[in-house]
Amino acid sequence: MSTASPELQDIADRVIAQAASGEQVEAYVSRGTETDIRVYEGEIEHFVSAQSEGIGIRVIRDGRTGFAYAGTLDPSAIASVLEQARDNVQFGTSDEWAGLAEADGVAVVPQELWSEALAAYPTDRKIELLKEFERLTLAADPRVRVDDADYSDVSGEAAVASTTGIRVSGRENGCVVSVSTLADDGDETQTGFGFSVGRSPIEFDLARAAREAADRATRLLGAVKPPSKRVTVVLDPYVTAQFLGVISSALNGENVSKGRSLFANRVGEPVASPLFTLVDDPTNVHAYTATDIDGEGLAARRNSLIEAGVLQGFVHSAYSARRAGTESTGNAVRGGFKGTPGVGCLAMQLQPGTRSQAELVADVDDGVLIQMVQGMHSGVNPISGDFSTGASGLLIANGQLGAPVREFTIASTLQRMLQDIVEVGGDVDWLPMRAAGVSLVIRDVTMSGA
Image 1 (cartoon, rainbow, N blue to C red):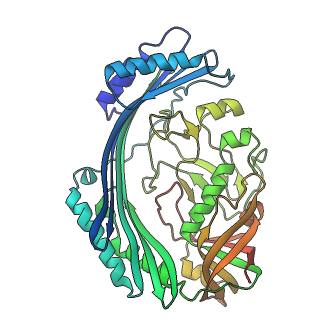
Image 2: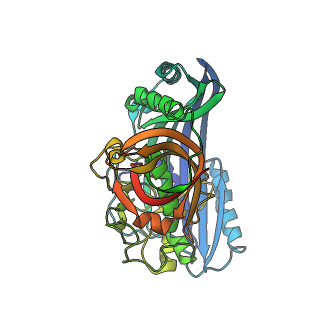
């Protein structure tokens, strides 16, 4: 990969050049800026523009790891961080799998992750864009109020170097706008939301996001608690993305090694409907979390996790891979220079079908469109598979959307839900999270209401 940040790469190179005999050293150097703006009733309610930079250094000797960091790139501070990391080795617990990632020869997939349009976008235009977003949302329906409208962008560059042959740097940026809505009808108020993501504000679809935010709130006006029964559910793309987020925990190689996954020891077995193909593909530039390198500097890559319902494998960092007796899948995740790498999915995507949500709904005789869920992560156990979460949405009868419903739960197990998938929609929605959304039809789910 071509060096996108020579200055940061040079800093990382100089750190590892000081490695002593018998120790592995890794330097992670980063610099970034972020902007957060909130508008309410046409006025700026919140504005933050921040910059940060720093370095994190890992030293590993005899199976013990020492780590230290500093929020500055001052040469004297960097020297101090290296010494602190070395000192901290003595306090580390001996771990037979400890070690840095090693260059594996997988080529980096070239991607356009940096937008000069965003880098040059004036702050005053960001503010005016957000005010326009608020105006569009209010104009979508007279019953709608805007709770808040937010704009956020992040730009960052990082470099990694290690004594095990890693030497890579890069930069990326992106932005998102979101709006929270309230819909009023007499004494009743319902909530909604909408958002749009892009490499730059030029890619935003404000009209669509405003319309969705108004629709999500207004369509739930008059909602009641439904009767309890077993139904077919159609998950909205946003809900499906949350569902995949729960599944990702069970596909985490470290969790598998610790016995904390319902998929442990099931590679090669059918675990889902043949209609279900799930990949983790951070090389897809459409993904909001697309990247070309992982948190340890290895090339990000497309990993097939479940193919036609059959479990293919798990995601791994260098550490979890050694523990499992396999190789890294380029899935080390890192929150920045202040921490050491973990492991996780980077950009999950379901292989989409061909039909719209409306076409999926038309085939459901008795069901419910799940528009929102509450407590997905607290109500779902990725180890046992128990699934129970609060929800709201619209009843489906004879292929038609009907009355709005709320204050009910949907319950099953992850194992059954994956096997009971009837169809995957073609309405891919690229969301500001680690999973893309798509409508998903699942049969025989318990709806507990009145």
